[in-house]
Length: 373
Image (cartoon, rainbow, N blue to C red; front, side, top):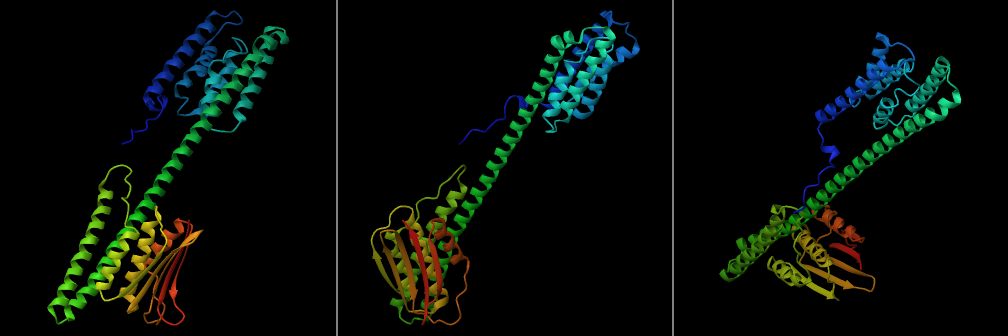
C-alpha cells in the first residue's frame, strides 16, 4: 500500500499562523519606523509623519488577504515617510508586499509603479535635503530598485511553481480517473463475456432438456448446464475478487487457447456443431483476447443465428494473428451490434488491431479480428 503523499511543510501552515506571523512582522516594522521618525533631525515629525509610518507598516499584517489594497496603502504611506526619513525608508515593507502581489498576479504594472514612485521619492527628498543626487543614486537607489525587481521575480517564480504543481496534480488526478474508468470498462467487458455466454448456453441447454424424451439425453443436457454454470461462476468470482481488493489490483490471467476445447464442448452440448482450426501458438497477453473473441462470437451464434455449424479459425502469420468465426445461420436482417461486439471491438483496438463483424454474402455471420504481433 502506497504512503499518503503529503504537501510541503509551508503548504501545511494554517492561515491563522500566517496571519500571526505577518502581524508580528508588521508590528516590528511599525516600531522601527516610529523609532526612526522620532530620532531623525531632517525635520520634526508630527502626527502626519507618524500616520505615514503606521500606514506603511501595519497593513503588512493582512498582505495575504488583500494584496492589491495593501500595496497601494504601503506605496502611499512610503511617499509620506520619505519626507522625514530618506528615499528608501519603505525599502523593507514595499518589497515584501510586492512579492505577495507577484504570487497572485502576473501583471507587471505594480513593479513599474513601485519603481517610478521610488525614483520620484529620491528626486523629491534629494531636493529637500540638499543632497547630491549622485550620492543618493549610488548609495541607495540602485540597491532598492534591485531589491524591488528581485522581490517581484521571486514572487513570480513562486506563482509559476504553484501553478505548475496544481497542473501536475490535476493531470495526475485526470490520469487516475481515466485509468479507473478503463479498468471498470475492462471488468465490465469480462463480466459481460462470462455471464452472457454462460446464460446463453444454459438457456439453450435448458430448452433442449425440456424437449428431449430420453433420460440419457436429458442427463447430458443437465450435466452440461451444471458445467457451464460452474465455469461462469468461477470466472465471475475471480473478477469480483479483484473488485474487493484494495490498491492497484490486477486481473488474474484469463482463459487462453488451452480453454477453447472446453468452450467448444459446452457449445456443442447446446446443440451447435463447433469446428476448431488453430494454426500456430499465440502466447502472452493476447490469449485471453483471442478466447473472448471466440466466446462472444459463439454466444451471438447461440442467441441470434439459428445455425447448426460454426467454424473457428485461428491462424498465426509472420506479422499478425487472424481470428475468424463463421456460421451457417440464416442471413435475414443484419444482426445487431450489442455490447458484446462493441466490447470485442474495443479489445482489438487496444492492441492496434482491426475488427469486422457482419453478414456473409450467402448465409450466416462472420466475426473477424486481425491482431498485430
